Image (cartoon, rainbow, N blue to C red):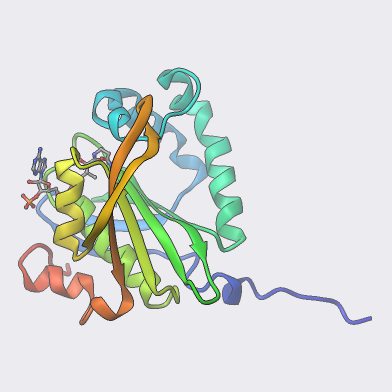
Length: 219
Ligand SMILES: CC(C)(COP(=O)(O)OP(=O)(O)OC[C@H]1O[C@@H](n2cnc3c(N)ncnc32)[C@H](O)[C@@H]1OP(=O)(O)O)[C@@H](O)C(=O)NCCC(=O)NCCS
């Protein structure tokens, strides 16, 4: 009997990879696959940034200190790595000038005739306001709608999250509608705006568009 082999690259085109660099006001932004060794920096930032992050993130059981302590990272890293190996997500660490500055994840990758996914992200409070998230979104969307073989990327955001709405608008996403009581965030069901972008809408690419608008440059 012939052995069955699986071509992981074909099952998950575009993964693993590094994206960037792209220079923005805050520094040089790069995306790389999450690492087990991110635990220390990840935990230090997230323990400090509870006020900055918690109100926008899905509700989870247990105290913030447990969910974001050093030992919370290995199981999260393992779960994300497992999903990535199955072709269901692309989990990136965002770095600025080589330092961990946040995360951006393409999740719920569906192929066949849908070829769609969502994007989610956060940036350290010490790195915000300098174009980091917008650069990360532009890099990752160009990648998944190009070499990643997807057709559509969605993002849902609370209407109150003006900074994130601005990130999506600057990056080129379109608002499609409002999902009522959509997601359990910070302890209650919250309305979310739905934003999306399809491959036909990216034109010369989101990164090129961002550069042309003066929001970034290639180092
Ligand atoms: C949302 C978030 C990712 C933005 O990161 P960032 O690196 O600061 O994003 P950028 O600098 O690329 O863009 C932010 C934009 O929002 C604007 N902004 C920031 N706070 C704002 C506010 N309260 N009201 C209106 N605009 C605001 C900034 O001025 C900037 O726009 P500009 O370039 O036109 O000036 C970051 O604040 C964060 O991690 N927040 C907590 C987690 C979160 O909300 N994740 C997303 C869930 S959908």
